[in-house]
Amino acid sequence: MNLLWRTVRIPMNTFCLHRTFAASALHLAPVQLPSRAESHLWYLVPDEVKSVSLLGQYSEILSPCENEYVACIRGEQLKKTALLARVLVRTTIARYQTDGYIDPRSLKFRKNIHGKPELEWDNDDSGSRPPVQFNISHTASLIACGVTSSSPIGVDIEKKDRKIQNNIISFARRYFTPNEVERLSSISDLNVQRQHFLKLWTLKEAYVKALGKGISALPFSTFTIKSRNFEKKELNGSGDSDPEITVESVDGQRSLLSNWQFTLLELAGTHFAAVCVARDGSMGGKNMFNFGLGYGKHFTGLKSILTVSDKCFTPKKLTVMKTIPFVGDESMSGTDAAIVCGF
Image (cartoon, rainbow, N blue to C red; front, side, top):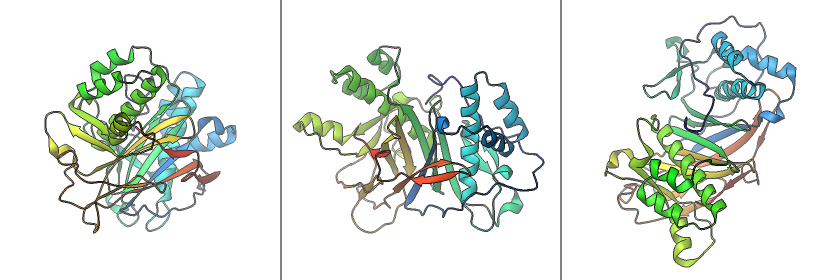
């Protein structure tokens, strides 16, 4: 979620580069890199990590100044979330081995000019570095890390039951486009309206993070998130789920809009999760969105919204994994813990 709502940030500090390693490294089962037609979403539930010994092992993965940062956080739950978020990033990336073992403690990070964390490799890492793009999002009760092979990715999560102190419509007028405010205003059920607001916010956040920007560099009011599912329900009253989500620029800057694919999930039964991934071109056959978990949707006539009428794109399959690093992993794709939801 954005800084407007987040009370604690977990920075990827570019200067946390040096440390002394223990003689024995904790083991991570290797995972094959996502293909160009795939993306992976790993998530961790902090309340399920209860072992003090395991948390101590996790601390050994972080750099000295990362541990210093965690130690300065007030509140044990926030401190634990900060630790686990960094551990999830390091252990997730270390799984994707192309030529030999990658120690999660050896990973280095930098930020782009807008503050998005990125991997930083030494020149002598060229033989073992995986071509990984990642993005992370967290609440106090869930942490998620999205991974692709080379394609930019943005991830955002928010609790489904999050209460919004402001009047939703007044708040939306400050940050959303007139089209989005109109759609919110048309929802009479206040709980449904609140959930639609949260879904919209996560989708917008995931989009600007995938672009490598933030809300200050790309204000939410400059682009509209649309869904044919919403329009379909208004037209014919159907409750069918149609997860086709698109983005449209308010000022016509089409260069920012091409080739993006959105996935909106209910994750772990408690959170909305939005994933935005850059799609590849040059796949034969019909234009198609594939929102993973066995859910695909053919479409036509998007015109300038995504500029896809003259291109064919590789559909992206999303695989969802739940993990407790060094303890166990479980595939959640196709289960009730990872459900593609309408918008």
